[in-house]
Length: 331
Length: 109
View 1 (tube, chains in turn cyan, blue):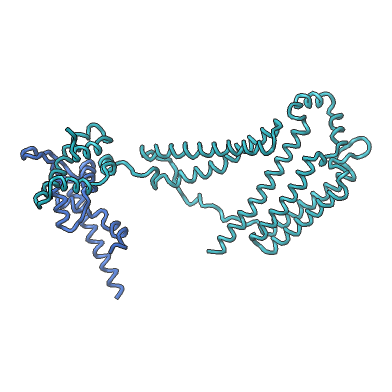
View 2 (cartoon, helix red, strand yellow):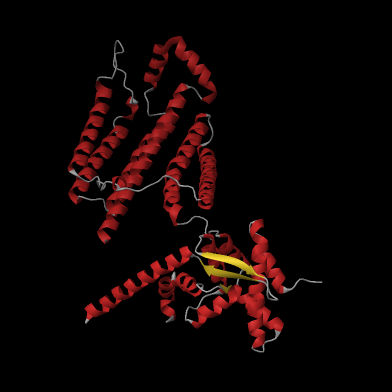
């Protein structure tokens, strides 16, 4: 004999309840449904039609069961949502970026292709991000169901400082001083050298870069200085300034990376001088690192990496400030 | 009135608890209570009322016992002493709210 709709409905409702609750809820629901059906048949409705109507009105048995068991019908409720969201944002800012950077650096140092390394690092970063989201959320879902306290309380001391927009006088002065030091360092390197060689000064930058490449570098520095003044004059970051900042940063990165990859950035005389001055220990270290292309190649990768990160940050920072300015202006 | 459904539901939330506590001062069972509520103008869904009765019982505002004397055994609920105190507190609050609302419209004119 097949079960009636009512029996099926009650079974579906009590299935997920605690065992000690099941019989009681079953008996009560049987009476409630029978009463409701009876009230309809008394009005002249057909029995099976009445049963359908009554059960339809009671709705999804899962919903009813959640009511009986006092179960939340959401994954993460308002009590935990903000804590979850803040933690997730923080983790997603820090962890995948570090992982991508570390993997990329490791790949480059072991001599892999740039494109291949990038793809692999991004793939691993994506995996890490997915894992982060999943496990963090799982922990909070458990918290939501057990009702534990996260111990996170908000108070006024947590209010963020009103952020400086980085377009003030101190930023202008800092930029100009930095550019001046850099320019002097380049000239000093060529004319006097930075360390005693016991004879002719040996420049770190390749002398073959004079005059055109070095001239281009000075040109970039002048543009950077002009940009610093323009930013100071505007008193705030704009879309145009952020775009200009991006172009300048990319030009600088291109200048370094083209020379670095072509092996033209550093004076070959300087490298051989170091190898000599380092003596046997250097030769041994270089031999150890030979599998990765030698010490100088490792240093070149690290330098290129550092420049890429610095430039990337500079570009992103400019856009971030420009977007924030626009938002503030709109309010 | 359909456009204000969400707000109206929000305002009504909580009134069903008070209505149940008052109606169950004399014992009653699920389906009869549902009909009584409807008669008094508290339109309530069965699937919210039945779990609500359990919850109030768990919180100690209702007591329950099975009546097996009739052909159909039914679970009867009755407002406990705590439940009566809660009902009184809620009623007092409701009255003060009524006064407060009335004072709002008075100031308008």
